[in-house]
Image (cartoon, rainbow, N blue to C red):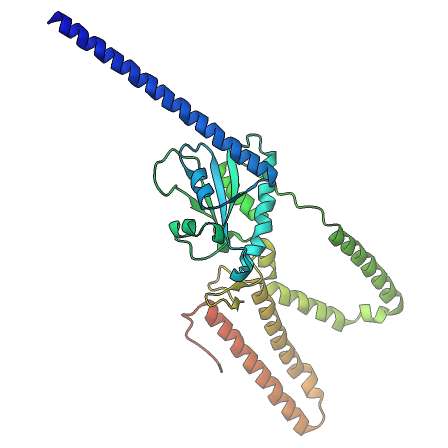
Length: 333
């Protein structure tokens, strides 16, 4: 009986040693696999200024366990047949942020990937993506889930600019990326020439047309222009940087953003023009029409300007109804 007990305990000890050795071998293999994968990703990123072009297999490999690094992936559709204007607008902004990857102290913490629809349709279906562009951030994780946890970038809230995207990514990854736009010599030259031309024009106008500069009509026009620009939402555009237009569900360019928290650049310009026409009609009725001596012509002018104001104000109300479909009122249209 004693021999049997000794043999059993010896066998148990050998089994435990074998299990520990196997576990250590597995951990070593995982560590080696992870180091190899990170090295490959770093080599690819260094060749393409921070961005890694992915396909379905490369995406699955990058997301597979073990993964002690975070990854942000741009899902896009750049092929001409898709005619994805937002994809083309955001692609250089995304790559501008990715270019800052080379300045990260530990380059193994975060990688930037780009997955085109033609190269990874199965991945688009996996994440239920029906539109592009879309950006997903995958934090480092040891999860064995088939779909890794992620966070989605909201273009409607944050916009398409590189600075906004870099701030969003930094808040989630803890890595601050500085966006450095390349110096635009053409834009700088145009600005210098513009300033020189403006100074020369002011000098010529002031020396030869002092009466024009002191004209109340000129300053009234400049004041009205400034008012139209401000009340139409131009300052909101400068702060939030919304897209100029965005294709709708039918593929046609949309110029009105639903809701009061969003707007497009073209929408702002249209509203400013409508305000200007309405203001011009009121000013004409007050100042120009009373100067017409012929009663018949004066009456015709009144009716014309009243029609312009009525139609334009009706269109403005329709714009408001598009922004707020629950608004019940309308004028002519």
